[in-house]
Image 1: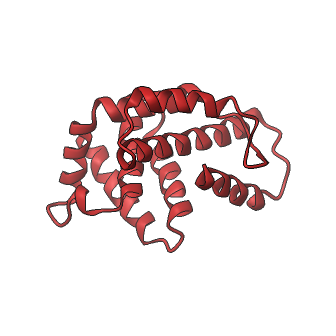
Image 2: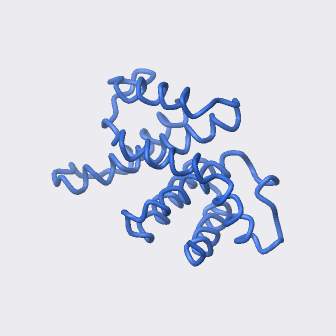
Length: 168
């Protein structure tokens, strides 16, 4: 959860005005939901946790008012759940699409676990076909920047997701 808290703190510092529109609020809420999905997919791989365990932990976390003393907007639980379900259910298909996007230059197994989780979450959401593709790419590139501030990984994720979109 530390990563989530840092992400939220950084986003909060960058806000220079009070957000009053419901649309802006939903945008932030959905960004946080996507971050939760990435973290859940990371935990599934890194800790060998099953989807049922992650789903239970995710639900418990969503109903907390604070994490490590930081208050946050309540994420959209259903969005996170759908992303995780799609990514877990279609992992083989998603992994094949990601490997194809690498054009045999790299392999999904050779990249960092966090990048794999980001790419799988984005691909899972792309399979839902409810959110515009450009929004999904923008959101996950932004989330990538939270984990990798140098920017190289953001370019990689942006390029790969654009290639993956062509195949879905």
